[in-house]
Amino acid sequence: MKYKCLVLFSGGLDSMLAVKILQENGIDVVPLCFESFFFSSKQAKKSAQELGVKLRVEDISIEHLKVIKKPKYGRGKSFNPCIDCHLMMIKEAGKIMKKEGFDFIATGEVLGQRPMSQNANALKIIDKWSGLDGLIVRPLSAKLLPPTILGSGKYSISGKSREMQLKLAKKFKIKNYPSPAGGCILTDINYGKNIKRLMDIYPSFGENDILILRAGRIFWEKDLLIVVARNEKECKELQTLKKKQDVFLEPDNFPGPTVIVRRYKKSPREEMIDCGVKYILRYSKNAGENPRIKI
Image (cartoon, rainbow, N blue to C red):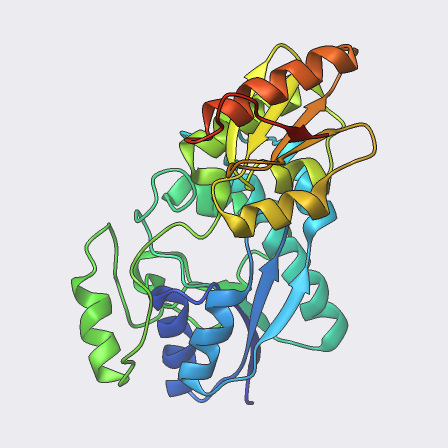
């Protein structure tokens, strides 16, 4: 019997190796990348091209946002509920697996590599509550984990060292792969603080609110969110993200940044304008004696 599996594919070296190890064992592999408001499939597409495999991309933004707001298993150092996110993605992959006749799911997870989401207990939680116990294969650490549909596995990689992964990259002739880094912006400390502040003030926030927190320098005054563009790209981005009730400010007779002021409660519009003017002048080097600002 020839197995067919879905591999959760971020595009990092570990997930690339998972694909190659499974292929080495004669398994038909379909790499699956989830994207949401907080992470994209950009790197996964590059890495899939490097491996010569066709990537499948699924958008889970709405369901992911629900998990972000109410995680069951807590958060990491920032606003990242990693166990809940991994569990949700495994469940979503499981739905595809059952519907389309795949035999199992695989991931590039390495035991002990990430303290919150890849420790033994976290992996047990995911296996149990996904309803896929025995059908989740982690090829890089399979020898250290309970047997799955494929048995005990060959590799026993654990911890944060990349030595074994680099050796396997050479073995499988993988030349282009990204440096280790978190692809999810929820792990960023500053972004985490801002989204926490947003949720405290406005729990029903949505996509636009998430995106605008990434579109410039972020400041808070009471219930006011102030976003100051840092370059021309962000100036254009703020133009597309502005809402009807936002105060949108641009320099008229001097060089300076675009600024948006957004209220989440009942601050007077005059207060919003005053706040925006203050920030646009603060980040303008040559406003002159009589600066004009378009509102």
